[in-house]
Image 1 (cartoon, rainbow, N blue to C red):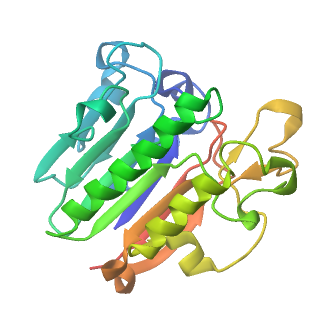
Image 2 (cartoon, helix red, strand yellow):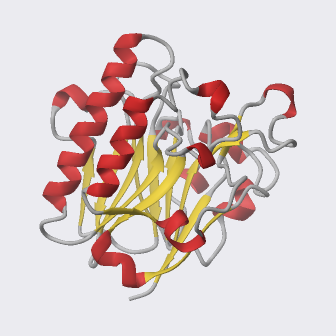
Length: 256
């Protein structure tokens, strides 16, 4: 079973760039979680809105067009679909799709960015807590596969310039502490589980100053699985060679 997660930084824009549709049409992908789609259904071409062979779910920001948004394309038929976290406080911005599958819960999530104002950092931290609570509730029935843009690099190895970003949201101690707690609660960062502490592995690069070409990046896009799925992990990888967004796709293969 091949799963992907990709922050596409605008689904309509990325669909017009070379390479995306080739990726999107790949027959080996079973589930594809996309973040920051920034497109409402009425704005999408039929091939993106309802591609043959896929079950599709999308959610968007309730009030601000062109902001956030998450989509999931699944060749597996979901048993149930939940859009957003159940508490209305966290259910306004188009940040979560939960598809319950036969063997696991699949969650595609786009966490808030905390860089603009203190209140957004607090919102991000609150969203983290609500998400963990939600995962723990769902996990009572079957394992969790959670993917998406977590907007935080976990450890110094996960960004190219950790010393220069110690006071930057996305690498603040309080943000990194959540990922520590998430892992302590029984969730595995599958890329590190399968690949160890290899450096220079990033999923996002600023468009400024050619940082992607120089690999000055951050690893902020993840697959986490609850630890009961550890025997099912085959491999986990990043695809920096796949272009179209300022993020790259991240992949996970599971076997059952």
